[in-house]
Figure 1: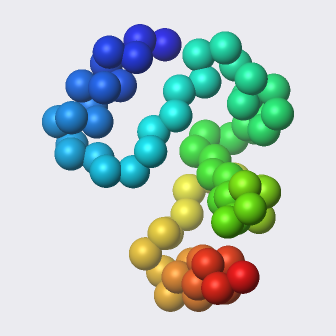
Figure 2: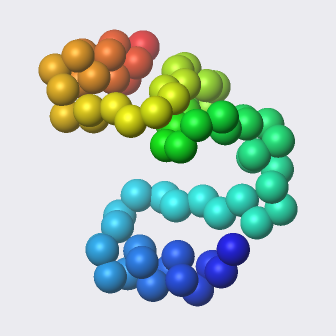
Amino acid sequence: GDSSKVKKFIDINSLTFPVLLDLDGIAEKLYPSFTIPFTYVIDKKGRVAARVDGAKNWASNETFAALDILVKG
């Protein structure tokens, strides 16, 4: 990948959250993807708490409730 393009995207969109690049493919080996899009939800201790394959309505009440449970531990 081209990290300069990613940096430009981050700057243009004023993203304030961490964006990690897997230039060596290490994360892909640890957390394989079988669909696009896919999401891993990481808990406070850095563990995979959930994996979501495919599109997800992240603004739904169900999603907010599930994430709230994860945040509260």
